[in-house]
Structures are given as C-alpha cells and as structure tokens.
Length: 303
Image (cartoon, rainbow, N blue to C red; front, top):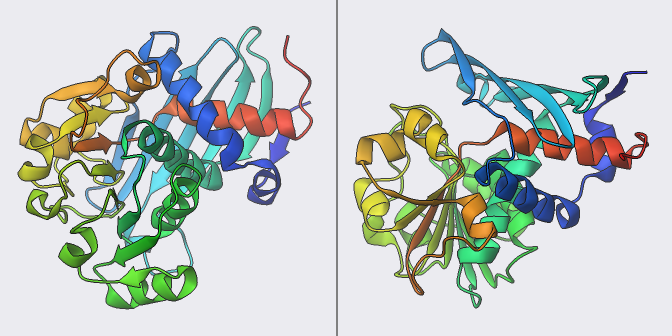
C-alpha cells in the first residue's frame, strides 16, 4: 500500500540529531559516485516570479523525486514561497512506497546540510552567529546550527527591518544592520531571495565560515566577488553549482571541494581559512530524508 505523510506526520519524527549525520552520509555517497542524480530540471513559468523544479535521485536504499515550486511573489502572504511534494520508491524493485509533503523536509534538510558542513569547517570555538535573512531558512539554520556549535550571540539582519525585529523578539537575537551583524561573526548564514549581493567580503572576519543557501539561479547573487574570491569554496555539487549558482558562475571562483569530499575527509581547507559553503540543494538530500521519515513512521524494515 502506498502511504501518504503530511507535514504534521513528518514534524513528529524528523529531528536534527538524526538528520545531520544522515545528510553527511548522503552527500559523501553522492561525491563518491554512488548516487544517480541529474541536475534539477527547472520549468520557468514567469521569469523571476514562478518556477517548478523536478529533482530525481536514486541510491542503493531508495529512489524518488521531488517536485518543488518557487514563487517569490508569495512572500508576505499566507502562501509559502516554496512548496514541494516527494514521491518515494523502493530502489531494488521500483515499488512506490509513499508520497510525502516536501515543505518541512526541504526546510530541515537544507539547514541540516549547512550544520554538517559547519561542524567540519567552522572554528571549534565559534561564539557569534550572523543571520542575513530572517525567514524560514534563518529560523531552521538557527536551530540546526545550535546542534553543532554553542553560540553565545546571535545577530540578524533583514531587508525588511520589521521582519528582523520580529525574529529577534522570537529568538533572542540582536537585530542589526547587515555590516554590523557580520563583522566579528564566526559563522554567517545568508538565506535570502536577493538577486544582487547582500554580503560583502570586506565585512568577514578572517577564518569565518559562511553558509549561503539563496540565489539559486545563474543570474542571481547574494555574495560579492570579495567573498567568493577571498574564501575557500565548498559546494554541494560541482555540476550543479556551475550550472545554477550565479555566485559561482558570475564570480568565476574556483571550487575547492564538494561537501561530500569534506565529510569523507578527502579534501580539507587550510587551517584558519575563510570558507564558503554554497548550497543549492540536491535531490539525494530529499530522498534520504524521506527514507528516514518513512522508516520512522512504520515503513517495512529494509533488507
């Protein structure tokens, strides 16, 4: 029987304690060539406003696909900017297993991957976290990153000051202007819908680590050239970054490694290097997360 899992079902069982190491395993397998996954296919319905992405992947354990819509103009309404559904299949037989709501899975797996990279690359004594953006991903990253570092201070900036103030009131963060938020921060998260850079390299503390999860189109940016060219660049997928990331394409920054290579200890930045993780999101992250949920909610045990 094909099962169906709602966001409420997923929220009951999905935790960062399990998800962060699961993302490390999934990305290590991806970089080792153990995952079959094309770069996502994007249907542009209205440039800059309406997109539909198709993201399939297959591993030894599971296969499936995510359909995700991206409607930036929904910001500020009751309708999310990102909505998604995931179809999960048994890899060995092709048998359909489940359909899952994809919104929370996308939110949490994105933050979990950043947390995993942060655990490997950020200074062990990191105390100050800066969040550029105050939306869903900023909140998810704050929660996930607290599983890998003990921050004593959290700062937030948003292009909409009222949003930053609301975030600060909810979380105990300090709402500041962008430069003040970033200067002296050990870890910086950039999670925006920006089309032009919002983070400047001149603001970064030497040795800081940056997780950048926005600007998913080849002509969009959220990091300036000083950030990209003055840091050691890690990506989730070389192929994806060179096709989809405006930050990578337009800056011409060299890619040092994929996250999976870092997780497998195949590539390590120089000690004390300023590092940037450019995340576009991979289908294998969604499928591995969906499998976690399926197993937790009573799917039959895998062989």
